[in-house]
Image (tube, rainbow, N blue to C red; front, side, top):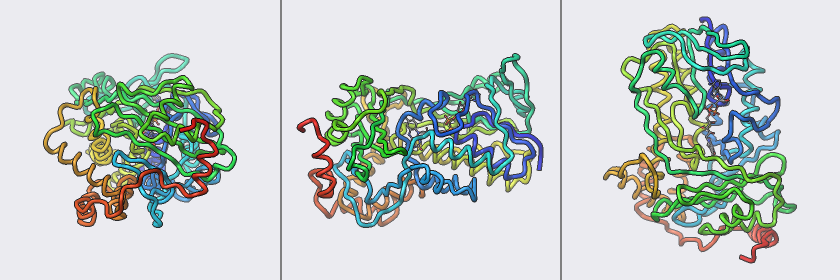
Length: 468
Ligand SMILES: Cc1cc2nc3c(=O)[nH]c(=O)nc-3n(C[C@H](O)[C@H](O)[C@H](O)COP(=O)(O)OP(=O)(O)OC[C@H]3O[C@@H](n4cnc5c(N)ncnc54)[C@H](O)[C@@H]3O)c2cc1C
């Protein structure tokens, strides 16, 4: 196959797209990132979201392993200290409808570790297995015309220069400049939708207290059904015997950055379990705050005359409230679509290739968007959501009913795990067994507290310095 592809951004979408291009036989694949990329699992400036909890769903990990076969990404992550958490039995999760049970059936298994570890593991595996080249450079525009993109303009120490390419992949994340870049080529009028719940994330790392090494991932979800700001918190095990504790609050319910306020915030949730756990744990960092978490969708796939030679993947195509842990998986699905379309086309020059990739990559973005935005529009103060229509209200009522059923029905819980794990599309929730479970409601009574084992209760009571 042919000549040069340039990928903008060495995050997950970028490195996975680069692997796909190299595996498809593109002679030269150059990834450009404006960041200095660390030689290890370390937080970096270009990924500010990396300070917050990132769940790697099994559907996304499978896609990554398909893209980088033979690297055993799962094995590498586990060897570096990532944790396996079963959605069915390994979590303490308080949903808006009450505590979820822990079933004997483990269900799908997700991985938890720092975002920096996921990023570095994928980047290292791609660089080991392919001839992809990563260069430090900031992309400032596209070259070519509105009919065909011919490369990128980069800004470096010596000024600006052009780098030609047969295909450009924009994987520059939520801060993408794709709209002004397209404008610069004379292509304007792309529709962008922003739904902003004012979500603020606050995170802090703690040392796992002695004896609490096996304490399950614990999460108190936000409740979108009570006309109050959403507030949530999670204690997630990460590599290095640490807990990453992340809180999220929508407009009016934002978590604070001061340590005392952070603890108070967790204790003020509908269940104080997160605060009780961390009240006796040693903090290892300050509280880090991020504000740029609105849902943004660029409808590039709807542009009638999309230029040849330009593909947009990952967060650059759409970002959404991270509550469902979907973004990394969606980035992997987009790269997988690029690979499938390259296989079909047999070359970078095939007419319509870029458009077909965009359309395929937009499908998982839209599914994730629907889940995230469907909840975000219910929070007071959300901007850009519009008033929920009849279909939105029906979907909300059904999701709520399904969640309630999942508090005491294995069939309902399984349907939710399958969708959350990103192994199946959301249509799984309308499988007859799921619909029946939702309609029947929970056959088991609602739990009055977290489903702790006696040993876990002892750990929690031992850590608690709040007297709650
Ligand atoms: C608070 C929070 C929590 C999240 N939790 C989860 C979770 O639990 N699970 C999950 O799956 N997802 C989660 N996400 C989403 C996830 O972080 C993103 O979906 C994912 O990072 C998208 O990857 P990407 O490669 O598209 O973009 P990014 O990872 O953001 O990478 C973009 C890259 O482009 C580079 N770049 C940007 N502009 C330029 C330029 N002009 N020139 C050169 N380089 C450039 C940057 O330096 C960066 O390296 C969360 C997001 C947030 C904000």
